[in-house]
Length: 489
Image (tube, rainbow, N blue to C red; front, side, top):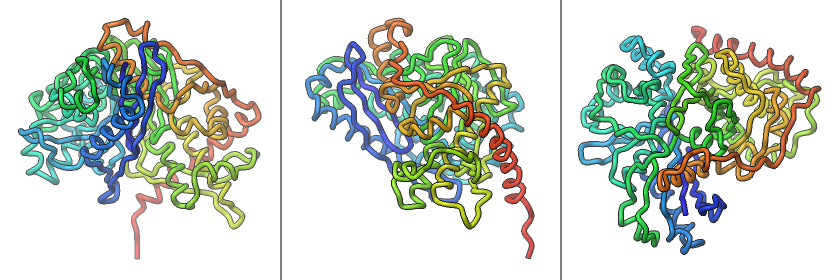
């Protein structure tokens, strides 16, 4: 048996699979999030830990014999978060998350201090990444910075609690701005630019390699008698790619989770920071990937549901067939944006509202705005030389066929629905657990899942959305100009 644990922003998911990769049991526990100031986004690591215990305890209650046969654990996690530990291994402050935008000024400082950052790390300095967060802590919380003995990403902190080891995998480490992505090793120059050293970093392993052993106290809690290896594991999107079998060049998927991602697997390091494309290591040896990121994807719909006081499914059920795409414009920049703008200061907006605008029209605009943002990301990947002709789709948003019909028309490519698409990250983590425990070849284990259906772009909607895309793109500079215009009076 192999256990995949996916530490998302809104929940922790646990998934147990057997030797034939059949689903045995799943559990999910929600997580709170704190926004102590505008642009700030934090979570208490202890909340991740307790949610994980609750999820695995639930699986044990449902399948005690299966969990007792556990051989490996894989971890998937939200990337970029900064968990700061003191010399005794205690957490010094709440974790600053991937969608936190407080460190805009520190990004400029980091690029000035390390001019080669784009070539070495393959990415622009963005507030979501880990390194600018540490510069912010150094400036605003100097005593915390002075006491920081170790910096861990979220899933690496969970590993630390499970195994006692400070270890990180290549894919998650790529999102720190401290990794030399081409060499797959920490960059001493990048670390020095943030006042840190290699001594404060975890050891690096490949995602499919062993990354510690489960401590006895947790094995006893879950009734496990075998030695249990914890895999090097992966960042959330790399784990999703492993779950989808996107391990060879040309593999592609779209994720409609809290954030939105367009992913392409590559056989080499292909940086393209000019359009804010992320170029990271994959979770498997000698493999890399590119991806674009929309910070508020499914979370945009969740926000709108909260504003209206209606469940997301109810809002989507209100929609009539799409006849006037882009009538209302929505920018899904609730937490700033990455690809292609790299703008942590911009915020979301509705445009072209009138006295006749209905709630359904605004809901449609939210779905379309996220789709347009993902199209911006697809075009950025295309400009880098990467061609995507079709893609699998995963994440909570993939439950909405209406949304996928809009997305297929906006992207102009077929989208494939998969079995257990919502559990892509956890399933990929479970596969990495198996690879670490057995030493099998990735190609043997990481096969593509069954495709349940394919949504082809509607040619009529493709044409109409092409015109609406221009209106969407014109709205961004108008909003940024308004935000940055000096106020008088």
